Amino acid sequence: MPADTVISIRDLVKSFDGRAVLSGVNLDVVRGETMVIMGGSGSGKSTLLRLIIGSFPPDRGRIELFGTDVVTAGRETLDGLRRRFGILFQSGALFNSMTLAENVALPIHEHTDLDREIIDIQVKIKLELVGLLDAADKYPSQISGGMKKRAGLARALALDPEILFYDEPSAGLDPVTSAQIDRLIVDMTQKLGVTSVVVTHEMDSAFTIADRMAMFDRGRMLAVETRDWYDRLRKSPEDEAERMSIDERLIRQFLRGDAEGPITQRRDQGALAKALLVDEAVISTPSIVPTRG
View 1 (cartoon, rainbow, N blue to C red):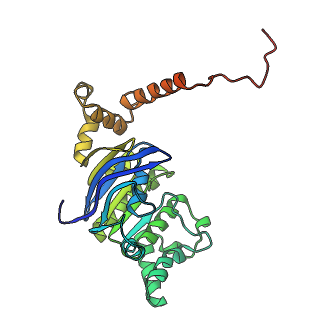
View 2 (tube, rainbow, N blue to C red):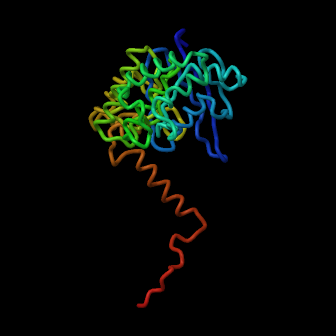
View 3 (tube, rainbow, N blue to C red):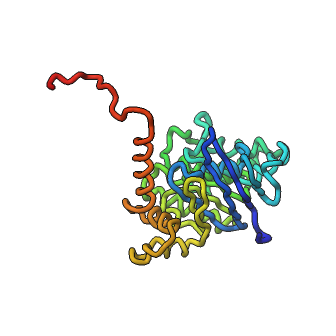
């Protein structure tokens, strides 16, 4: 494990109601890089993010942040770790009763003893970083979805974190606004030297911001490779794809968004098997009785 590793995950397992969501996941994230975590809906990527930040414990495995095991850490230690990272939630998660400036100021008030004048300066700096200083006195209901994402990023930066976590930062945004968010992520990494972990299934964003990429499928980590490795796989011709392993062909289909491939074949076969095995009629008694025989 490299000396500059800030996140280390080993043999991580998590189940909900007897259904495995993560199965033996291993991942290292090094300081200053942008790691993009990809996968389809329900693949386990958001669950991994919540486990890393200590929202709930895994069934088995080890998660280290800055060399400290999150799983066994006490509350005081965990609170200290949480002050070293920031989170941009999918919805922005702003408090509607507060202005953007008050939203950004909240974590500084909660976790520091700085004077109000210093906090005001810090808030202005963070809002300027995301281009929202002119909207400091607006409420979340008065701004667009893209502005809410940027305001959420400003709040995530409030305590000058060493790691930034992004949960679907481009979700629900138009292409231009999505590109602006991508540029912000790259700028934050370059200007502030923070480590970024981005959960997304938006391929345009992933290839724009990533240094390395990790691909999930049904709770398994299929590959952790550089952006160039994934780009070569995405652009590989069909005759070359025929010689790939099943995992590589699955990744290729996901990256390209192809309608046909191992993902859709598996999905169709699974639906048919479930329909044949379930002890229920597919067609129930109609609510409207037909008038003709």
